[in-house]
Amino acid sequence: MSKGWYVVHTYSGYEQKIERIINKLRENDPEFAMYCTGVNVPMEQVEVMNEKGEKKMEMRKVLPSYILVELDLPESSWRSVTSKIIRIQGVTGFLSSDKSGLVPPSPLSQREHRQILERTGELAPEKTFRPKQDFNKGEEVLVVSGPFASFKGSIEDIDIQKGKLRLSLEILGRFTPVDVDFAQVEKVVQ
Image 1 (cartoon, rainbow, N blue to C red):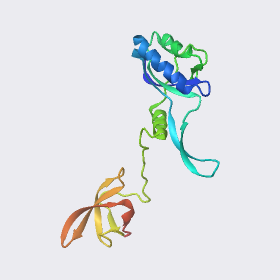
Image 2: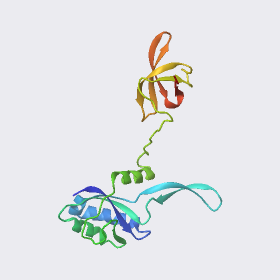
Image 3: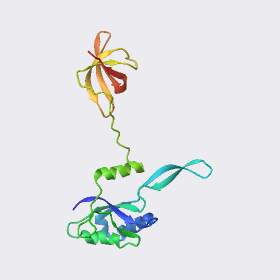
Image 4: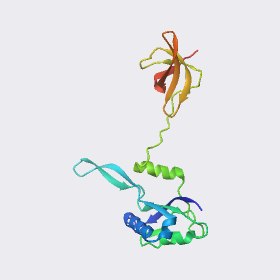
Protein backbone atom coordinates (compact mmCIF):
# COMPACT_ATOMS: atom_id res chain seq x y z
CA MET A 1 0.00 0.00 0.00
CA SER A 2 1.58 3.28 0.99
CA LYS A 3 4.22 4.09 3.53
CA GLY A 4 3.64 7.35 5.32
CA TRP A 5 2.95 9.17 8.54
CA TYR A 6 -0.56 8.65 9.88
CA VAL A 7 -2.30 10.74 12.53
CA VAL A 8 -3.71 8.88 15.54
CA HIS A 9 -6.21 10.60 17.86
CA THR A 10 -5.69 10.04 21.59
CA TYR A 11 -7.13 11.14 24.89
CA SER A 12 -5.63 14.44 26.02
CA GLY A 13 -2.50 13.88 28.09
CA TYR A 14 -2.02 10.28 26.87
CA GLU A 15 0.25 11.10 23.92
CA GLN A 16 3.63 10.11 25.48
CA LYS A 17 2.12 7.06 27.19
CA ILE A 18 0.73 5.77 23.89
CA GLU A 19 4.06 6.52 22.18
CA ARG A 20 5.81 4.30 24.78
CA ILE A 21 3.20 1.52 24.33
CA ILE A 22 3.58 1.54 20.53
CA ASN A 23 7.37 1.43 20.86
CA LYS A 24 7.05 -1.52 23.27
CA LEU A 25 4.72 -3.26 20.76
CA ARG A 26 7.36 -2.73 18.08
CA GLU A 27 10.03 -4.29 20.29
CA ASN A 28 7.93 -7.33 21.28
CA ASP A 29 6.12 -8.04 17.99
CA PRO A 30 8.49 -8.33 14.98
CA GLU A 31 5.56 -8.62 12.53
CA PHE A 32 4.06 -5.35 13.83
CA ALA A 33 7.52 -3.73 13.69
CA MET A 34 7.68 -4.58 9.97
CA TYR A 35 4.67 -2.35 9.34
CA CYS A 36 5.10 0.26 12.10
CA THR A 37 8.47 1.92 11.58
CA GLY A 38 8.15 5.00 13.78
CA VAL A 39 6.08 6.93 16.28
CA ASN A 40 6.37 10.58 17.26
CA VAL A 41 4.70 13.12 19.55
CA PRO A 42 5.67 16.40 17.80
CA MET A 43 6.91 18.98 20.32
CA GLU A 44 7.97 22.58 19.79
CA GLN A 45 9.82 25.01 22.00
CA VAL A 46 7.81 28.14 22.84
CA GLU A 47 8.55 31.22 24.89
CA VAL A 48 6.10 31.82 27.76
CA MET A 49 5.79 34.33 30.59
CA ASN A 50 5.68 33.00 34.14
CA GLU A 51 3.64 34.58 36.94
CA LYS A 52 6.54 36.94 37.76
CA GLY A 53 6.58 38.28 34.20
CA GLU A 54 9.82 36.51 33.29
CA LYS A 55 10.24 34.85 29.92
CA LYS A 56 11.12 31.16 29.84
CA MET A 57 11.24 28.41 27.21
CA GLU A 58 8.79 25.52 27.42
CA MET A 59 8.14 22.40 25.35
CA ARG A 60 4.57 22.10 24.03
CA LYS A 61 2.80 19.59 21.83
CA VAL A 62 2.35 20.75 18.26
CA LEU A 63 -0.79 18.60 17.91
CA PRO A 64 -2.39 18.13 21.35
CA SER A 65 -4.36 14.84 21.53
CA TYR A 66 -2.64 13.50 18.39
CA ILE A 67 0.47 11.44 17.67
CA LEU A 68 2.15 10.56 14.39
CA VAL A 69 2.75 6.91 13.50
CA GLU A 70 4.82 5.87 10.49
CA LEU A 71 3.19 2.86 8.88
CA ASP A 72 3.68 0.79 5.76
CA LEU A 73 0.15 -0.57 5.55
CA PRO A 74 -0.24 -3.79 3.54
CA GLU A 75 -3.03 -3.89 0.95
CA SER A 76 -4.63 -7.07 2.21
CA SER A 77 -4.17 -6.88 5.98
CA TRP A 78 -4.16 -3.17 6.86
CA ARG A 79 -6.95 -3.74 9.41
CA SER A 80 -4.80 -6.06 11.54
CA VAL A 81 -2.07 -3.39 11.77
CA THR A 82 -4.38 -0.46 12.51
CA SER A 83 -6.49 -2.48 14.98
CA LYS A 84 -3.42 -3.14 17.17
CA ILE A 85 -3.05 0.62 17.54
CA ILE A 86 -6.76 1.33 17.95
CA ARG A 87 -7.03 -1.28 20.77
CA ILE A 88 -4.54 0.63 22.93
CA GLN A 89 -6.33 2.24 25.86
CA GLY A 90 -6.45 6.00 25.25
CA VAL A 91 -6.54 5.78 21.44
CA THR A 92 -9.80 6.86 19.82
CA GLY A 93 -8.81 6.08 16.23
CA PHE A 94 -7.01 7.26 13.13
CA LEU A 95 -7.64 10.67 11.64
CA SER A 96 -9.45 9.80 8.44
CA SER A 97 -12.08 11.16 6.11
CA ASP A 98 -13.86 7.77 6.19
CA LYS A 99 -15.48 7.04 9.56
CA SER A 100 -16.96 3.67 8.52
CA GLY A 101 -13.68 1.76 8.96
CA LEU A 102 -14.08 0.16 5.52
CA VAL A 103 -11.34 2.24 3.92
CA PRO A 104 -7.77 2.45 5.24
CA PRO A 105 -6.73 5.77 6.78
CA SER A 106 -4.88 8.28 4.63
CA PRO A 107 -1.32 9.34 5.44
CA LEU A 108 -0.23 12.95 5.78
CA SER A 109 0.93 14.58 2.58
CA GLN A 110 4.65 15.36 2.34
CA ARG A 111 3.85 19.06 2.65
CA GLU A 112 1.81 18.54 5.85
CA HIS A 113 4.52 16.35 7.39
CA ARG A 114 7.20 18.89 6.43
CA GLN A 115 5.22 21.72 8.07
CA ILE A 116 5.04 19.75 11.33
CA LEU A 117 8.78 18.99 11.22
CA GLU A 118 9.50 22.68 10.58
CA ARG A 119 7.48 23.64 13.69
CA THR A 120 9.35 21.10 15.82
CA GLY A 121 12.68 22.37 14.53
CA GLU A 122 13.67 19.01 13.03
CA LEU A 123 13.77 20.65 9.57
CA ALA A 124 14.79 24.16 8.68
CA PRO A 125 11.89 26.10 7.17
CA GLU A 126 11.94 26.54 3.44
CA LYS A 127 12.67 30.12 2.61
CA THR A 128 11.23 31.36 -0.61
CA PHE A 129 12.86 34.59 -1.63
CA ARG A 130 10.73 36.94 -3.67
CA PRO A 131 12.68 39.87 -5.14
CA LYS A 132 11.02 43.28 -5.45
CA GLN A 133 12.03 43.34 -9.09
CA ASP A 134 12.07 40.66 -11.75
CA PHE A 135 15.46 40.17 -13.34
CA ASN A 136 16.32 38.59 -16.68
CA LYS A 137 19.64 37.42 -18.10
CA GLY A 138 21.27 40.04 -20.29
CA GLU A 139 19.51 42.98 -18.57
CA GLU A 140 21.55 45.99 -17.58
CA VAL A 141 21.55 46.94 -13.89
CA LEU A 142 23.15 49.56 -11.67
CA VAL A 143 24.86 48.48 -8.44
CA VAL A 144 23.52 50.87 -5.75
CA SER A 145 25.33 49.57 -2.63
CA GLY A 146 28.41 47.62 -1.61
CA PRO A 147 31.98 47.82 -2.91
CA PHE A 148 30.84 48.05 -6.55
CA ALA A 149 28.32 50.88 -6.02
CA SER A 150 27.77 53.08 -9.10
CA PHE A 151 29.02 50.38 -11.51
CA LYS A 152 26.76 49.28 -14.37
CA GLY A 153 26.75 45.72 -15.62
CA SER A 154 24.73 43.05 -17.33
CA ILE A 155 23.19 40.02 -15.64
CA GLU A 156 24.92 36.73 -16.50
CA ASP A 157 23.18 34.41 -14.02
CA ILE A 158 20.29 34.53 -11.52
CA ASP A 159 20.16 32.41 -8.33
CA ILE A 160 16.69 32.89 -6.84
CA GLN A 161 17.32 30.43 -3.96
CA LYS A 162 20.27 32.48 -2.66
CA GLY A 163 18.90 35.85 -3.79
CA LYS A 164 22.03 36.59 -5.82
CA LEU A 165 22.91 37.83 -9.28
CA ARG A 166 26.13 37.25 -11.20
CA LEU A 167 26.96 40.43 -13.04
CA SER A 168 29.56 41.22 -15.64
CA LEU A 169 31.07 44.57 -14.58
CA GLU A 170 33.71 46.55 -16.43
CA ILE A 171 36.45 47.16 -13.89
CA LEU A 172 39.72 48.79 -15.03
CA GLY A 173 38.90 48.11 -18.67
CA ARG A 174 38.13 44.40 -18.17
CA PHE A 175 34.82 42.60 -17.78
CA THR A 176 34.78 40.82 -14.42
CA PRO A 177 32.12 38.47 -13.01
CA VAL A 178 30.81 39.69 -9.64
CA ASP A 179 28.15 38.20 -7.34
CA VAL A 180 25.76 40.67 -5.66
CA ASP A 181 22.50 40.44 -3.70
CA PHE A 182 19.21 41.36 -5.37
CA ALA A 183 18.89 44.28 -2.93
CA GLN A 184 22.19 45.77 -4.12
CA VAL A 185 21.03 46.49 -7.67
CA GLU A 186 18.38 48.40 -9.58
CA LYS A 187 17.33 48.05 -13.17
CA VAL A 188 18.67 50.67 -15.53
CA VAL A 189 15.73 52.50 -17.09
CA GLN A 190 16.34 53.21 -20.75
